[in-house]
Length: 219
Image 1 (cartoon, rainbow, N blue to C red):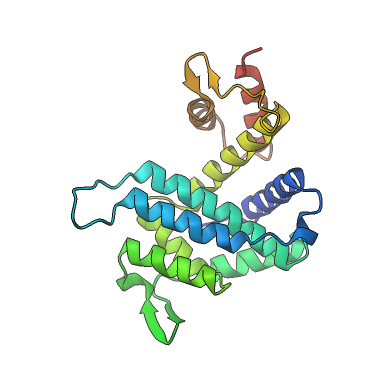
Image 2: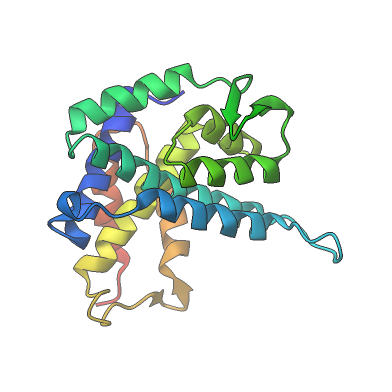
């Protein structure tokens, strides 16, 4: 179950990141759902879809793609509400509370019962809905659960990735001066260990992640 406080934190972080990328991001009206369809296609690649060769599902990569997709879904919801976080929060919570894997989605003249679809087909439907400028969190949550994640997992990974992205920007990522390898390990690896060591229920969770990254970053 996604808590209101968690959704509020994620919307705030997403708004901050969008502003860091472009201070006029609301006026720029970036096609965030286009990004969802690209990330969805990449997720299908990580799952494996080629019937003519042996492929293995890469679950960690699938989960990472879902985190990226969630970034863009939040961005689209914020954009549609002119970056008003209170309105966006109300919409997110309403959509999450109404999310039901038994839901039937009507798209392109066809009806799709989410619970009867395979994971690849769910991603295909997510892509199709994104092209049609539609967001359905019943479908997203069903994909998330099938990728062995719940809302708590999503929250922890989202906050961690968002804070890491912010940390990278602060340390010169755009200028090319950021060091991604720390003492022989990628920053993502440090992030995983940091998240495991912290209590995600604390209000200071995101600040503690940033402080831990700062402490671990090579001088």
